[in-house]
Image (tube, rainbow, N blue to C red; front, side, top):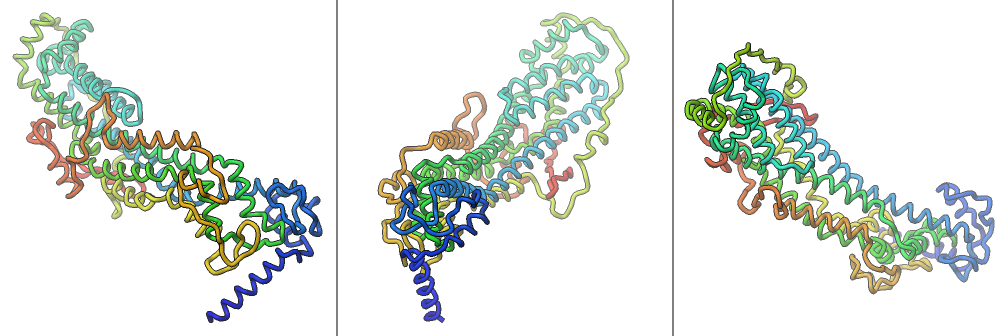
Length: 526
């Protein structure tokens, strides 16, 4: 069998070499491929070989089936071919990131809505007389949560304090001084301004601020990182190729057609030199892309306990309840402090409106029957990272992958070396990256592409964000102090302390886990 394959290879080599040795008699095969590929009109295509003195790249001492116009069309086709191959190679990776970016955004939106509903339900069920007045402030708070997560430059500390500041006049008039169901705007403003001095809710606002900063910022950064990943792929998918690269691609892919060698493929070493030269700038992304995926993985592992948006948002209403209980217990002292700062209130009793919040209606679409394939948000992140990890070396090995899987001839077969059909490529094969191209015999690489430089700078920045090293306005987290072992519940209990309000809350805090199915159907579990 080995002798038969060797003979067959020798026969192919003989036939291809004969076609390239001046014995080309017809251009019919090249014409058919040209027409089949729809590279342009065939009316100017030579019927028989001609002298190619006007050719710029595919020049040959032998008669040729190419004209200058055809050479230009072949060059366009060569660039389009490599673009298509690049886009095909990255399609699965791009789909993986874009699909999960959309999924996580949708999950975060659902979490925010569910947490808002739980908080509204707390007021309706337990503090019904305050529900209507508190509704707007609850809605505004969770609007701010969404704005922050999805990229708006606002401070978590500011919107947490604003929520409790605006809540105190309502609590004071309905709970501490129950006869004050209606106070003047001026008096309510005085109460609001006095909130931080009086501290009616104790340490709860501080605890909420810490928990929101710790949990929302990683989730916000996680989403930003996924969107940047899509941007990186879109940029490299549409990379601009230099003139020298375009000529090298033409010589490798289509110059054989000019000699009637429509079935030939480039030698592996030759292909690597050409493609590594053309993708030299893209290879520079490799180190930063690996760092990007590594940092995403580390952040994902650290997002548990008070760093977990799921845990923090779904338990927010418990902390609100703690705050209201504390204000009620300290009511007499608070009333005395208020009288000193704002004076005695004007009593204008009115009938308290009922609660208009419909929990069943607002939870519809969020709470549905779960399926066997349900998974938590942490599970979803872990699964995504496990798939993304497979693409850590994507940019470093892209040229080799394209040549091995798409472009080059198999080992042992006759191949095109840029000039003729040979048994093997004899020139030195260079490595990947810009520095390695100084000795490339096929492509000259001049400097770094500005677009690639921009992408690298963005990757460096997002890596800093993912590692918590670049937060001038917000709390930082230390990935070195958090682990990824244990179940979700174990992680929550293991990462809480008294200051974070995770232990011994007055309302009996419940660990809530939002389960997510393959179709992002949600089911609340206690």
